[in-house]
Length: 389
Image 1: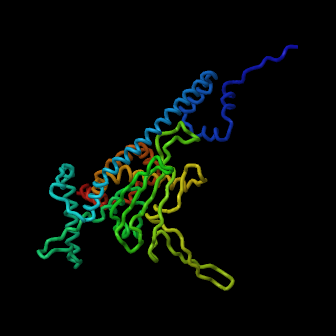
Image 2: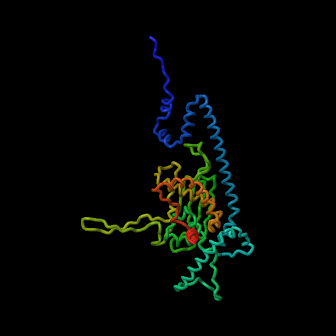
Image 3: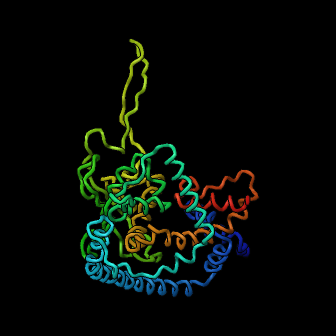
């Protein structure tokens, strides 16, 4: 008696069997249709072809290892030139603090950008400020400091230089509370140092320099960011360059009753002998939580929950942005010129989403409008006034 003829299962059944683990099923749900088609097509290739693609992946892995060496050398080169720029950073700090007055030659710089500003809007803002000042004088408020000749005295240096920068940046502005402001007014400089890539902890350190103040005894608050230069061992082919994987702040030596990162709450606790008032110290929102001394990371050394991982990723982004963009070009973030360039890219990415969201009656746009700078608020008010006229 002949054996029954074996029939090949349909291609759809073969494809379903190829993906059967929970991890693969979860991954499949997030795949785009194009990616699903590509993976499905690859899985149907003959085994000899798949074997050759493994050789290509091994070549790619070696190439990425060379790329990691390139980034290490680039990091070292940046350290070399950063040491040459220290004198420029020191002079910027001295001008901002008022320790030195720049010469006329130092101040020779074209003001073409200022002339491009809409003169009508600029004049209206100036007129509005003037009217406000006149009303303040009528109420008997104290005028600005004047010298013996009655001329208004200019402040030393550039007051609140770094505080203005931090409040101009949306990512840091949302962190700053009202009670942080008096402390940040004492912020005199922000700098960074690159840690050697040859050390066991390569990366960089942010240093926030403070004048003597009533809140803490530290003259510098630091936060270190540790980077991984080599491809991740669990997914080496996804390597796109060095990435921050850990960070560590510092201990802040707070003066008595001046710690803004905690607050005391009073609660009433019911008991057998009656109600009892209990006080408890709990964490408080503050910019200075950024300097949390506890070391945390997402490099697989310990388990972190989703909320902690999101917080760490935000801190990594802030640290990288301050190092790469803000600290070297601080004056442009103070004047607001660099902000337009940064937000233009974000607006282009969000423009497509806006068209869809506007049709959703439940959509409530939130672009940080509650965290706008004073200049943005003034400009919006003037534009509204122009439309009404």
